[in-house]
Length: 517
Image 1 (cartoon, rainbow, N blue to C red):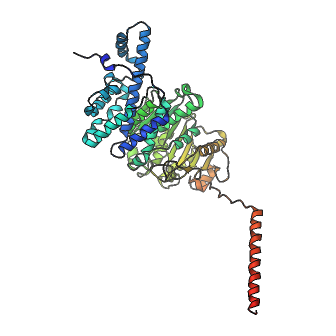
Image 2: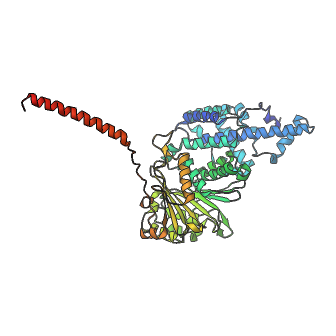
Image 3: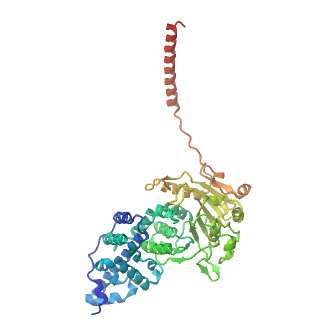
Protein backbone atom coordinates (compact mmCIF):
# COMPACT_ATOMS: atom_id res chain seq x y z
CA UNK A 1 0.00 0.00 0.00
CA UNK A 2 1.38 3.43 -1.00
CA UNK A 3 2.22 5.70 1.90
CA UNK A 4 0.77 9.19 2.18
CA UNK A 5 2.94 12.15 3.07
CA UNK A 6 1.16 12.38 6.42
CA UNK A 7 2.60 8.97 7.26
CA UNK A 8 6.07 10.49 7.20
CA UNK A 9 5.27 13.14 9.78
CA UNK A 10 4.29 11.10 12.81
CA UNK A 11 3.88 12.74 16.16
CA UNK A 12 5.72 16.00 16.66
CA UNK A 13 8.00 16.36 19.68
CA UNK A 14 7.02 18.53 22.63
CA UNK A 15 7.71 22.25 22.71
CA UNK A 16 11.39 22.87 23.30
CA UNK A 17 13.26 25.40 25.38
CA UNK A 18 15.44 28.03 23.74
CA UNK A 19 18.93 26.76 22.97
CA UNK A 20 21.75 28.87 24.35
CA UNK A 21 24.97 29.80 22.57
CA UNK A 22 27.03 27.94 25.19
CA UNK A 23 25.02 24.72 24.80
CA UNK A 24 25.39 24.76 21.04
CA UNK A 25 29.11 25.51 21.14
CA UNK A 26 29.67 22.60 23.53
CA UNK A 27 28.19 20.24 20.95
CA UNK A 28 30.21 21.80 18.15
CA UNK A 29 33.41 21.40 20.17
CA UNK A 30 32.63 17.70 20.58
CA UNK A 31 31.96 17.42 16.85
CA UNK A 32 35.24 19.18 16.04
CA UNK A 33 37.16 16.86 18.37
CA UNK A 34 35.42 13.88 16.77
CA UNK A 35 36.42 14.62 13.18
CA UNK A 36 39.86 16.16 13.86
CA UNK A 37 41.54 16.05 10.45
CA UNK A 38 39.97 12.81 9.26
CA UNK A 39 36.83 14.35 7.77
CA UNK A 40 36.29 17.71 6.07
CA UNK A 41 34.97 20.20 8.64
CA UNK A 42 32.40 21.40 6.08
CA UNK A 43 30.25 18.40 6.96
CA UNK A 44 29.78 19.79 10.47
CA UNK A 45 28.46 22.99 8.88
CA UNK A 46 26.21 20.97 6.60
CA UNK A 47 24.75 18.88 9.43
CA UNK A 48 24.08 22.00 11.49
CA UNK A 49 22.34 23.54 8.48
CA UNK A 50 20.29 20.41 7.73
CA UNK A 51 19.21 19.99 11.36
CA UNK A 52 18.11 23.63 11.51
CA UNK A 53 16.03 23.35 8.31
CA UNK A 54 14.40 20.14 9.49
CA UNK A 55 13.51 21.51 12.93
CA UNK A 56 12.32 24.84 11.53
CA UNK A 57 10.08 23.19 8.94
CA UNK A 58 8.59 20.88 11.56
CA UNK A 59 7.85 23.84 13.84
CA UNK A 60 6.18 25.79 11.03
CA UNK A 61 4.22 22.70 9.97
CA UNK A 62 2.87 22.15 13.48
CA UNK A 63 1.92 25.82 13.82
CA UNK A 64 0.07 25.67 10.50
CA UNK A 65 -1.78 22.49 11.47
CA UNK A 66 -2.90 24.03 14.78
CA UNK A 67 -4.12 27.12 12.93
CA UNK A 68 -6.20 24.98 10.57
CA UNK A 69 -7.60 22.91 13.45
CA UNK A 70 -8.73 26.13 15.17
CA UNK A 71 -10.67 26.83 12.01
CA UNK A 72 -12.57 23.56 12.50
CA UNK A 73 -10.59 20.95 10.57
CA UNK A 74 -9.66 17.57 12.03
CA UNK A 75 -5.94 16.90 12.41
CA UNK A 76 -5.61 14.51 9.47
CA UNK A 77 -7.23 16.94 7.04
CA UNK A 78 -5.25 19.83 8.51
CA UNK A 79 -1.98 17.93 8.00
CA UNK A 80 -2.85 17.09 4.40
CA UNK A 81 -3.63 20.73 3.62
CA UNK A 82 -0.51 21.94 5.44
CA UNK A 83 1.65 19.61 3.38
CA UNK A 84 0.16 20.84 0.12
CA UNK A 85 0.77 24.54 0.81
CA UNK A 86 4.46 24.95 0.11
CA UNK A 87 4.25 28.73 0.23
CA UNK A 88 3.68 28.58 3.99
CA UNK A 89 7.27 27.59 4.84
CA UNK A 90 10.53 29.46 5.05
CA UNK A 91 12.23 26.51 3.35
CA UNK A 92 10.48 23.59 1.69
CA UNK A 93 11.83 20.55 3.50
CA UNK A 94 11.00 17.01 2.29
CA UNK A 95 8.96 15.56 5.20
CA UNK A 96 10.07 12.01 4.47
CA UNK A 97 13.62 13.12 5.30
CA UNK A 98 12.96 14.97 8.54
CA UNK A 99 15.87 14.53 10.93
CA UNK A 100 13.95 12.32 13.33
CA UNK A 101 12.65 10.22 10.43
CA UNK A 102 16.22 9.71 9.19
CA UNK A 103 17.10 8.56 12.68
CA UNK A 104 14.38 5.91 12.47
CA UNK A 105 15.62 4.60 9.11
CA UNK A 106 18.32 1.97 8.70
CA UNK A 107 21.38 3.62 10.26
CA UNK A 108 23.64 1.60 7.94
CA UNK A 109 22.23 3.60 5.04
CA UNK A 110 22.63 6.98 6.75
CA UNK A 111 25.07 8.39 4.11
CA UNK A 112 22.66 7.45 1.29
CA UNK A 113 19.65 8.85 3.13
CA UNK A 114 21.40 12.14 3.95
CA UNK A 115 22.51 12.50 0.34
CA UNK A 116 18.94 11.90 -0.83
CA UNK A 117 17.71 14.51 1.63
CA UNK A 118 20.11 17.08 0.14
CA UNK A 119 19.09 16.18 -3.41
CA UNK A 120 15.40 16.52 -2.56
CA UNK A 121 16.01 19.84 -0.77
CA UNK A 122 17.64 21.23 -3.91
CA UNK A 123 14.71 20.03 -6.03
CA UNK A 124 12.16 21.74 -3.78
CA UNK A 125 14.12 25.00 -3.32
CA UNK A 126 15.65 26.66 -6.40
CA UNK A 127 17.78 28.91 -4.16
CA UNK A 128 19.48 25.81 -2.70
CA UNK A 129 20.43 24.30 -6.06
CA UNK A 130 24.16 24.27 -6.40
CA UNK A 131 24.38 24.73 -2.63
CA UNK A 132 23.31 21.69 -0.60
CA UNK A 133 23.51 19.27 -3.53
CA UNK A 134 27.16 20.21 -3.95
CA UNK A 135 27.98 17.92 -1.01
CA UNK A 136 27.74 14.15 -0.99
CA UNK A 137 27.65 12.16 2.24
CA UNK A 138 28.59 9.09 0.23
CA UNK A 139 32.19 10.20 0.75
CA UNK A 140 31.83 8.73 4.22
CA UNK A 141 31.41 5.28 2.70
CA UNK A 142 34.95 5.32 1.32
CA UNK A 143 36.37 4.40 4.70
CA UNK A 144 34.74 2.33 7.45
CA UNK A 145 36.03 4.60 10.22
CA UNK A 146 34.53 7.64 8.49
CA UNK A 147 31.12 5.98 8.32
CA UNK A 148 31.26 5.51 12.09
CA UNK A 149 32.27 9.17 12.53
CA UNK A 150 29.20 10.21 10.54
CA UNK A 151 26.96 8.06 12.72
CA UNK A 152 28.40 9.64 15.86
CA UNK A 153 28.10 13.16 14.40
CA UNK A 154 24.47 12.49 13.50
CA UNK A 155 23.71 11.31 17.03
CA UNK A 156 25.51 14.30 18.49
CA UNK A 157 23.37 16.71 16.48
CA UNK A 158 20.25 14.68 17.25
CA UNK A 159 20.55 15.94 20.82
CA UNK A 160 20.07 19.52 19.62
CA UNK A 161 16.65 21.08 19.28
CA UNK A 162 17.05 24.00 16.91
CA UNK A 163 13.38 24.93 16.61
CA UNK A 164 13.70 27.98 18.83
CA UNK A 165 17.37 28.78 18.29
CA UNK A 166 17.75 32.43 17.29
CA UNK A 167 19.56 33.35 14.05
CA UNK A 168 22.15 35.17 16.16
CA UNK A 169 23.01 31.99 18.07
CA UNK A 170 23.02 29.83 14.93
CA UNK A 171 25.07 32.39 13.02
CA UNK A 172 27.61 32.58 15.84
CA UNK A 173 27.79 28.80 15.87
CA UNK A 174 28.50 28.70 12.15
CA UNK A 175 31.21 31.32 12.58
CA UNK A 176 32.63 29.38 15.52
CA UNK A 177 33.20 26.37 13.25
CA UNK A 178 34.83 28.48 10.53
CA UNK A 179 37.08 30.16 13.11
CA UNK A 180 37.94 26.90 14.90
CA UNK A 181 39.23 25.26 11.72
CA UNK A 182 40.77 28.43 10.25
CA UNK A 183 44.38 27.66 11.33
CA UNK A 184 44.19 24.20 9.79
CA UNK A 185 42.53 25.37 6.56
CA UNK A 186 44.95 28.32 6.21
CA UNK A 187 47.70 25.79 5.49
CA UNK A 188 45.59 24.61 2.53
CA UNK A 189 45.13 28.12 1.16
CA UNK A 190 41.72 29.01 2.59
CA UNK A 191 41.47 32.56 3.94
CA UNK A 192 39.43 33.47 7.01
CA UNK A 193 39.11 37.15 7.85
CA UNK A 194 39.00 37.71 11.63
CA UNK A 195 35.63 39.17 12.64
CA UNK A 196 37.36 42.01 14.50
CA UNK A 197 38.94 43.18 11.22
CA UNK A 198 35.54 43.00 9.51
CA UNK A 199 33.99 45.00 12.35
CA UNK A 200 36.65 47.69 11.97
CA UNK A 201 36.01 47.98 8.23
CA UNK A 202 32.24 48.08 8.64
CA UNK A 203 32.37 50.74 11.37
CA UNK A 204 34.46 52.94 9.08
CA UNK A 205 32.26 52.43 5.98
CA UNK A 206 28.97 52.68 7.92
CA UNK A 207 26.44 50.95 5.63
CA UNK A 208 22.91 52.36 5.88
CA UNK A 209 19.45 50.77 5.41
CA UNK A 210 18.50 50.86 1.74
CA UNK A 211 22.12 50.78 0.55
CA UNK A 212 23.67 48.07 -1.61
CA UNK A 213 26.76 46.36 -0.20
CA UNK A 214 29.04 44.28 -2.42
CA UNK A 215 31.90 41.88 -1.70
CA UNK A 216 33.66 40.72 -4.90
CA UNK A 217 35.77 38.14 -3.00
CA UNK A 218 33.15 37.04 -0.52
CA UNK A 219 34.54 33.74 0.83
CA UNK A 220 32.03 32.38 3.36
CA UNK A 221 30.19 35.72 3.49
CA UNK A 222 31.73 37.29 6.60
CA UNK A 223 32.01 40.84 5.24
CA UNK A 224 28.38 40.95 4.08
CA UNK A 225 27.12 39.42 7.30
CA UNK A 226 29.22 41.93 9.25
CA UNK A 227 27.50 44.78 7.38
CA UNK A 228 24.08 43.28 8.14
CA UNK A 229 24.86 42.80 11.84
CA UNK A 230 26.20 46.35 12.09
CA UNK A 231 22.93 47.84 10.80
CA UNK A 232 20.92 45.43 12.94
CA UNK A 233 22.82 46.51 16.06
CA UNK A 234 22.58 50.22 15.29
CA UNK A 235 19.06 50.47 13.88
CA UNK A 236 17.21 47.20 14.49
CA UNK A 237 16.41 44.06 12.52
CA UNK A 238 13.69 45.64 10.40
CA UNK A 239 16.17 48.25 9.13
CA UNK A 240 18.89 45.63 8.59
CA UNK A 241 16.52 43.78 6.27
CA UNK A 242 16.51 46.87 4.04
CA UNK A 243 20.21 46.32 3.30
CA UNK A 244 20.84 44.73 -0.12
CA UNK A 245 23.74 42.29 -0.11
CA UNK A 246 25.72 41.12 -3.16
CA UNK A 247 28.70 38.80 -3.29
CA UNK A 248 30.78 36.74 -5.70
CA UNK A 249 33.09 33.82 -4.90
CA UNK A 250 35.26 31.81 -7.27
CA UNK A 251 35.24 28.55 -5.25
CA UNK A 252 31.88 26.73 -5.65
CA UNK A 253 32.13 24.97 -2.29
CA UNK A 254 32.97 28.18 -0.43
CA UNK A 255 30.07 29.88 -2.25
CA UNK A 256 27.76 27.12 -0.97
CA UNK A 257 29.01 27.71 2.59
CA UNK A 258 28.25 31.43 2.20
CA UNK A 259 24.67 30.71 1.10
CA UNK A 260 24.13 28.48 4.15
CA UNK A 261 25.84 31.02 6.39
CA UNK A 262 23.36 33.69 5.25
CA UNK A 263 20.34 31.49 5.90
CA UNK A 264 21.49 30.56 9.40
CA UNK A 265 22.01 34.27 10.17
CA UNK A 266 18.41 34.91 9.15
CA UNK A 267 19.42 36.97 6.10
CA UNK A 268 16.82 36.67 3.37
CA UNK A 269 17.48 36.84 -0.38
CA UNK A 270 21.12 37.92 -0.66
CA UNK A 271 22.32 37.94 -4.26
CA UNK A 272 25.34 35.65 -4.38
CA UNK A 273 27.14 34.29 -7.43
CA UNK A 274 29.89 31.84 -8.37
CA UNK A 275 32.69 32.86 -10.69
CA UNK A 276 36.00 34.64 -11.23
CA UNK A 277 35.29 38.30 -10.39
CA UNK A 278 38.35 39.73 -12.12
CA UNK A 279 37.59 37.92 -15.38
CA UNK A 280 33.79 37.65 -15.31
CA UNK A 281 32.06 39.91 -12.78
CA UNK A 282 28.55 38.59 -12.15
CA UNK A 283 26.64 41.79 -11.39
CA UNK A 284 25.73 44.00 -14.33
CA UNK A 285 23.18 46.64 -15.28
CA UNK A 286 22.55 46.29 -18.97
CA UNK A 287 25.92 46.34 -20.67
CA UNK A 288 27.60 48.13 -17.78
CA UNK A 289 29.14 47.04 -14.50
CA UNK A 290 26.72 47.36 -11.58
CA UNK A 291 27.63 50.07 -9.06
CA UNK A 292 27.21 49.86 -5.28
CA UNK A 293 27.10 52.16 -2.26
CA UNK A 294 29.61 50.13 -0.26
CA UNK A 295 32.28 47.81 -1.70
CA UNK A 296 34.15 45.78 0.90
CA UNK A 297 36.56 42.84 0.61
CA UNK A 298 39.62 40.92 1.73
CA UNK A 299 40.71 39.48 -1.62
CA UNK A 300 43.58 36.99 -1.98
CA UNK A 301 46.85 38.83 -1.41
CA UNK A 302 49.48 38.83 -4.18
CA UNK A 303 47.38 36.56 -6.38
CA UNK A 304 49.27 35.62 -9.52
CA UNK A 305 48.04 35.06 -13.07
CA UNK A 306 46.24 38.39 -13.58
CA UNK A 307 48.71 40.43 -15.57
CA UNK A 308 48.06 42.65 -18.58
CA UNK A 309 47.64 39.85 -21.12
CA UNK A 310 44.95 38.13 -19.03
CA UNK A 311 43.04 41.21 -17.89
CA UNK A 312 42.82 42.67 -21.39
CA UNK A 313 40.67 39.64 -22.28
CA UNK A 314 38.45 40.03 -19.19
CA UNK A 315 34.90 41.37 -19.33
CA UNK A 316 34.69 45.12 -18.62
CA UNK A 317 38.41 45.62 -19.21
CA UNK A 318 37.75 49.36 -18.81
CA UNK A 319 37.80 48.65 -15.05
CA UNK A 320 41.59 48.73 -15.26
CA UNK A 321 41.90 52.25 -16.66
CA UNK A 322 44.72 53.12 -14.25
CA UNK A 323 46.92 50.36 -15.62
CA UNK A 324 47.57 46.64 -15.41
CA UNK A 325 49.29 45.07 -12.40
CA UNK A 326 52.28 42.71 -12.69
CA UNK A 327 51.46 39.06 -13.29
CA UNK A 328 52.64 38.06 -9.80
CA UNK A 329 50.26 40.30 -7.80
CA UNK A 330 46.62 41.17 -8.54
CA UNK A 331 46.31 43.52 -5.54
CA UNK A 332 45.83 46.64 -7.67
CA UNK A 333 43.53 44.77 -10.07
CA UNK A 334 41.22 44.09 -7.12
CA UNK A 335 41.43 47.71 -5.98
CA UNK A 336 40.54 48.95 -9.47
CA UNK A 337 37.63 46.53 -9.79
CA UNK A 338 36.27 47.72 -6.45
CA UNK A 339 36.65 51.38 -7.41
CA UNK A 340 34.87 50.72 -10.70
CA UNK A 341 32.07 49.00 -8.74
CA UNK A 342 31.47 51.96 -6.39
CA UNK A 343 28.86 54.61 -7.18
CA UNK A 344 30.19 57.98 -8.28
CA UNK A 345 27.88 59.66 -5.77
CA UNK A 346 28.76 58.47 -2.26
CA UNK A 347 30.44 55.17 -3.13
CA UNK A 348 32.80 53.96 -0.37
CA UNK A 349 35.41 51.24 -0.72
CA UNK A 350 37.25 49.33 2.01
CA UNK A 351 39.85 46.68 1.24
CA UNK A 352 42.20 44.58 3.36
CA UNK A 353 45.42 44.32 1.40
CA UNK A 354 49.03 43.15 1.63
CA UNK A 355 51.22 45.88 3.10
CA UNK A 356 53.60 45.58 0.14
CA UNK A 357 50.93 46.96 -2.20
CA UNK A 358 51.46 50.33 -0.51
CA UNK A 359 55.04 50.81 -1.65
CA UNK A 360 56.09 48.33 -4.34
CA UNK A 361 57.47 49.93 -7.48
CA UNK A 362 57.04 49.25 -11.19
CA UNK A 363 53.54 48.89 -12.61
CA UNK A 364 51.97 49.08 -9.14
CA UNK A 365 53.57 52.46 -8.42
CA UNK A 366 52.21 53.85 -11.71
CA UNK A 367 48.67 52.69 -10.78
CA UNK A 368 49.02 54.15 -7.27
CA UNK A 369 50.14 57.50 -8.66
CA UNK A 370 47.17 57.79 -11.02
CA UNK A 371 44.61 56.85 -8.36
CA UNK A 372 46.17 59.34 -5.95
CA UNK A 373 46.06 62.08 -8.58
CA UNK A 374 42.32 61.42 -8.93
CA UNK A 375 42.06 61.99 -5.15
CA UNK A 376 40.13 58.78 -4.41
CA UNK A 377 42.16 57.54 -1.44
CA UNK A 378 40.87 58.69 1.94
CA UNK A 379 42.85 56.67 4.50
CA UNK A 380 45.51 54.00 4.94
CA UNK A 381 45.60 51.96 8.15
CA UNK A 382 48.55 49.77 9.11
CA UNK A 383 47.27 46.77 11.06
CA UNK A 384 49.14 44.82 13.78
CA UNK A 385 51.07 41.72 12.79
CA UNK A 386 49.79 38.18 13.41
CA UNK A 387 46.10 39.02 13.02
CA UNK A 388 45.51 36.57 10.19
CA UNK A 389 45.52 32.78 10.27
CA UNK A 390 47.34 32.34 6.95
CA UNK A 391 50.15 34.88 7.41
CA UNK A 392 52.07 36.68 10.14
CA UNK A 393 52.33 39.78 7.93
CA UNK A 394 50.57 42.86 9.30
CA UNK A 395 48.39 43.78 6.34
CA UNK A 396 46.74 47.14 5.75
CA UNK A 397 43.32 48.63 5.18
CA UNK A 398 42.75 51.16 2.41
CA UNK A 399 39.64 53.35 2.39
CA UNK A 400 38.58 55.00 -0.86
CA UNK A 401 35.79 57.52 -1.28
CA UNK A 402 34.34 58.69 -4.59
CA UNK A 403 32.76 61.69 -2.82
CA UNK A 404 35.42 62.89 -0.38
CA UNK A 405 34.19 65.76 1.83
CA UNK A 406 35.64 69.14 0.86
CA UNK A 407 37.82 69.32 3.99
CA UNK A 408 39.43 65.98 3.11
CA UNK A 409 40.16 66.66 -0.53
CA UNK A 410 43.83 66.65 -1.47
CA UNK A 411 44.69 64.79 1.73
CA UNK A 412 45.15 61.22 2.98
CA UNK A 413 44.89 60.10 6.60
CA UNK A 414 47.57 57.65 7.71
CA UNK A 415 46.87 55.61 10.86
CA UNK A 416 49.59 53.46 12.41
CA UNK A 417 47.64 50.87 14.39
CA UNK A 418 50.53 48.41 14.53
CA UNK A 419 50.53 48.50 18.35
CA UNK A 420 46.75 48.26 18.77
CA UNK A 421 46.28 44.61 19.69
CA UNK A 422 45.84 42.08 22.45
CA UNK A 423 46.94 38.47 22.60
CA UNK A 424 44.43 36.07 21.06
CA UNK A 425 42.67 34.22 23.91
CA UNK A 426 42.53 30.88 22.06
CA UNK A 427 45.47 30.74 19.63
CA UNK A 428 48.87 31.34 21.20
CA UNK A 429 50.68 32.67 18.14
CA UNK A 430 47.96 35.14 17.10
CA UNK A 431 46.97 38.67 18.08
CA UNK A 432 43.59 40.29 17.71
CA UNK A 433 41.96 43.72 17.74
CA UNK A 434 40.12 44.44 20.98
CA UNK A 435 37.00 46.61 21.15
CA UNK A 436 39.00 49.53 22.51
CA UNK A 437 41.46 49.26 19.61
CA UNK A 438 38.68 49.28 17.04
CA UNK A 439 37.10 52.30 18.74
CA UNK A 440 40.42 54.18 18.77
CA UNK A 441 41.02 53.59 15.05
CA UNK A 442 37.44 54.49 14.05
CA UNK A 443 37.55 57.66 16.17
CA UNK A 444 40.80 58.69 14.50
CA UNK A 445 39.29 58.13 11.05
CA UNK A 446 36.22 60.17 11.91
CA UNK A 447 38.19 63.06 13.44
CA UNK A 448 40.65 63.11 10.52
CA UNK A 449 43.34 65.00 12.40
CA UNK A 450 46.89 64.52 13.63
CA UNK A 451 47.42 62.36 16.73
CA UNK A 452 51.01 62.10 17.91
CA UNK A 453 52.48 58.70 17.12
CA UNK A 454 49.18 57.34 15.81
CA UNK A 455 47.57 59.34 13.00
CA UNK A 456 48.59 62.05 10.57
CA UNK A 457 46.83 63.92 7.77
CA UNK A 458 49.18 64.17 4.79
CA UNK A 459 48.85 66.42 1.73
CA UNK A 460 49.01 64.74 -1.67
CA UNK A 461 52.00 66.94 -2.51
CA UNK A 462 54.04 65.29 0.25
CA UNK A 463 53.06 61.84 -0.99
CA UNK A 464 54.13 62.86 -4.49
CA UNK A 465 57.50 64.01 -3.09
CA UNK A 466 57.85 60.53 -1.56
CA UNK A 467 57.39 58.99 -5.02
CA UNK A 468 53.80 57.92 -4.23
CA UNK A 469 54.97 55.63 -1.45
CA UNK A 470 52.05 54.88 0.92
CA UNK A 471 54.05 53.00 3.55
CA UNK A 472 52.38 54.14 6.77
CA UNK A 473 55.62 54.20 8.80
CA UNK A 474 56.96 56.80 6.39
CA UNK A 475 54.36 59.27 7.68
CA UNK A 476 53.58 58.25 11.25
CA UNK A 477 55.62 56.16 13.65
CA UNK A 478 54.45 54.98 17.09
CA UNK A 479 55.89 57.02 19.94
CA UNK A 480 57.94 55.01 22.38
CA UNK A 481 56.46 55.25 25.82
CA UNK A 482 58.78 57.14 28.11
CA UNK A 483 59.17 55.60 31.52
CA UNK A 484 57.83 57.89 34.23
CA UNK A 485 60.47 58.76 36.84
CA UNK A 486 59.58 59.21 40.49
CA UNK A 487 62.19 61.88 41.34
CA UNK A 488 61.73 61.61 45.11
CA UNK A 489 62.03 57.81 45.11
CA UNK A 490 65.07 57.94 42.84
CA UNK A 491 66.72 60.55 45.09
CA UNK A 492 66.06 58.38 48.18
CA UNK A 493 67.58 55.38 46.41
CA UNK A 494 70.63 57.45 45.41
CA UNK A 495 71.02 58.79 48.99
CA UNK A 496 70.99 55.22 50.38
CA UNK A 497 73.60 54.15 47.86
CA UNK A 498 75.82 57.11 48.80
CA UNK A 499 75.43 56.30 52.50
CA UNK A 500 76.47 52.69 51.85
CA UNK A 501 79.45 53.84 49.76
CA UNK A 502 80.51 56.18 52.61
CA UNK A 503 80.42 53.26 55.08
CA UNK A 504 82.49 51.12 52.70
CA UNK A 505 85.02 53.98 52.34
CA UNK A 506 85.24 54.30 56.13
CA UNK A 507 85.93 50.56 56.50
CA UNK A 508 88.61 50.61 53.81
CA UNK A 509 90.30 53.59 55.46
CA UNK A 510 90.28 51.67 58.77
CA UNK A 511 91.93 48.65 57.14
CA UNK A 512 94.54 50.84 55.51
CA UNK A 513 95.41 52.51 58.88
CA UNK A 514 95.83 49.10 60.49
CA UNK A 515 98.23 48.18 57.70
CA UNK A 516 100.24 51.34 58.33
CA UNK A 517 99.30 53.28 55.27
